[in-house]
Length: 258
Image (cartoon, rainbow, N blue to C red):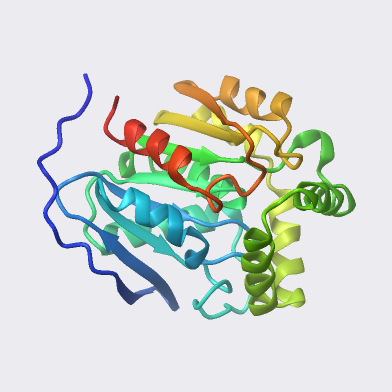
């Protein structure tokens, strides 16, 4: 049965905060209204929480939105060494527990899907509902050269705003940390963890996404015990940046159990 939610309150002012998790400061943005579902947004490699700003604005009309910067990205300081995907999943769980959030919807984009999958596979009690947007890494193209080429192809027809946002974030991350985390990302085989996920999953793909081809995303969906896939027309890998409304509507519906 779909979950029922009380009418949201009008508390929608953004709040930038920092939470201490172990020896790591994690910066996050707290937006949206209270009374609906709580959504935790996890970005991809080289990005940060601000990449979700337009999407968070749409999602925030229906519930509370927490978008965080993974260690070494955005405003969160760089740790001494990159966490494995499993350890990053643990960090998300600690983040949720430290903030006292009950049963949030975890939303991951690109590398963030790997983090979300590890979080709910290792800690099924943390969430019973997840969203995976453009899940990585395509098992048939798991190399730095191939992934770089696909990203370039994906950006050819992309909106200049997407390219600018990505460039700003990549410069902030820096090449050294990006490459260290990229190795961790490529070493992680999401397909081995997907069958362990018991949460209800919505898998989203931009129909023009060259990084995550249809065959791969369909395979991801098939490996999940409880999942459905939707494509967003005329969108690439960054399916939720330019005109986030289609993705937001699908995510809100899933969060409400519709």
